[in-house]
Length: 401
Ligand SMILES: Nc1nc2c(ncn2[C@@H]2O[C@H](COP(=O)(O)OP(=O)(O)OP(=O)(O)O)[C@@H](O)[C@H]2O)c(=O)[nH]1
Ligand SMILES: [Mg+2]
Image (cartoon, rainbow, N blue to C red):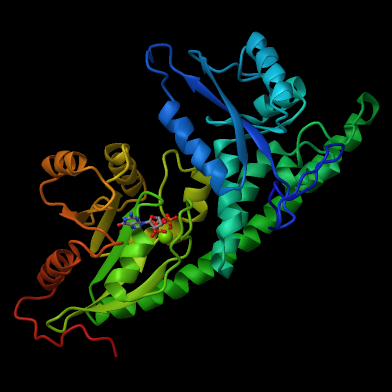
């Protein structure tokens, strides 16, 4: 995929590739835990990081968690830990370290120098997955915009590293004597990046405007809109397919869906509403992505109802609900009424579902896989949609011409 660091061959490193010719990376995950975390804090987060890595086709060889109050500004880890990690890198034949936190450009440099392998952080990894999954013109532009926003402060002034991540300890570097030239080149690269970002922003704005026009027309025609939202992999697309007979991509990977897909649904008494599938959330969604995908995320902001889908079989379900609500608040969608849907009931432990239901008495329990609970959900949706229409709305109100 264009612009992503995983496809680029790294000079001086033996390259293993999978069937698709992509390089097969082998990584060590690196987490920082709070001092008071008696249970290894950050373990959940590292589990998720491992899923993200797997989604990106990366092998995880090992994990390391350091308990520390505050990351070292130069090397993230303390120097003893850097040495320990370097030994593990060697023993595990790893060629990549993925930090769960966000690294400053200086920390990436410090760590790469100490470890001799490439280092990325959670944000870089998520950006890479988004780059792999972007399909539409708009999605690609948004991803590139987010990548450039991430790269800009990380530029290091010698050619190859422009592709971020191309990173590290490459290219011999500008030696002491050529410092001036390096800085000039850096400035040229920065200018180039900024220019590209302006173009992309304009592209994204244009597409967003087009969508806005369609949305306004539907609003004028009084077609209620329901936006499906939720944590990544919760089953949003699967549910859309069930409710709307659509063919959204359903996949057991994170961030399978990046483009909003709109479908019309007709209730059994003839009301029509739109159902929109959207990009999923994850904890600490990189702000570069939130910024770049704002117009996509705003599909929820503009909706009459947010169908918040939860993977009830996940031990993290409660955390996921909180994360999604936090992001919704951040993008200004907290005023949109929410209907909570506990999905994957076929997979979840009944006790776990019972606990979630006690916490969220209005939630609807379903399985997009088996169809369990879907009639009930359709019924609730019908009532909610009807309530959105002016009273005494005739049954054919809200038809889309
Ligand atoms: N067992 C079970 N699996 C489900 C159910 N709903 C969805 N899945 C599976 O969960 C995985 C994710 O489903 P998707 O519909 O792609 O999830 P999503 O929320 O759209 O995910 P992203 O677009 O990646 O954010 C797929 O492997 C689905 O087959 C369900 O009710 N039960
Ligand atoms: Mg999806």
